[in-house]
Length: 247
Ligand SMILES: O=P(O)(O)OC[C@H]1O[C@H](O[C@H]2O[C@H](CO)[C@@H](O)[C@H](O)[C@H]2O)[C@H](O)[C@@H](O)[C@@H]1O
Picture 1 (cartoon, rainbow, N blue to C red):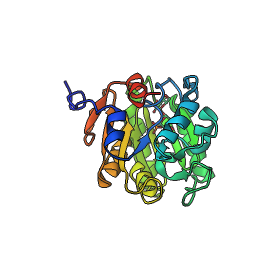
Picture 2 (cartoon, rainbow, N blue to C red; picture 1 turned 180 degrees about the vertical axis):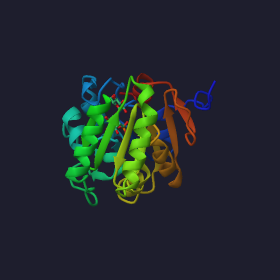
Picture 3 (cartoon, helix red, strand yellow; picture 1 turned 30 degrees about the vertical axis):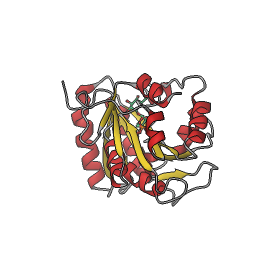
Picture 4 (cartoon, rainbow, N blue to C red; picture 1 turned 135 degrees about the vertical axis):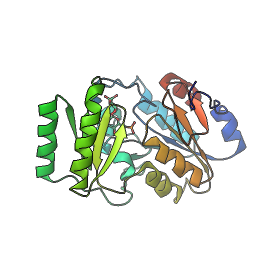
């Protein structure tokens, strides 16, 4: 057994809500939807956007999606849901009514994008262009992970970028964007302020979200098999998350 599977399941959401106001932060891939071979292949379950809207109302508006995807990518899959959301690993934020919260992250220079695309093409990887950076996907080809990471580290070092790792992916992003930053930005404002934050996520970058929730007196819930360093609770998979959310 690993560290994550030893973690207990959280109290049912209804019991938590009966105790105190909760602010809920939800990761997207691997948490609300199943992982697919490529970013564009995901299947969004019927009714998910509507269920999230109802959940947001139940939480008095204290619900935010916090994804590594860019916001327009999220919108392409979910539509313009009327709940708070942060994309690009937290760097890009919208309130429920679509008002932008904070500055938009800078994208990569054209030359950098061309180099990343060329590396992906030469090495049989999938390149995902993002508003704030770029991602090299090696899902299904674990033997390519080490070289992709080494390339990304060199590339980032010479251009003042940061590297983030995820499931079958390494990403190059502008420094400073973390899911903790997104939690913090929302927790400083109404209706989130004063509530207990709970962050639910499955991947490495969600550890920042768990830390952000802890900073404001809350906790993280790790999803799936990846051992978590910070989460206090655990849910087995996407279906268990939906069940816990009662959606
Ligand atoms: O923070 P998240 O909402 O979980 O986003 C993390 C990354 O998700 C996507 O990649 C992951 O899901 C893909 C589809 O299931 C999968 O093919 C890939 O291997 C995973 O890493 C997305 O493409 C990335 O941009 C997000 O950063």
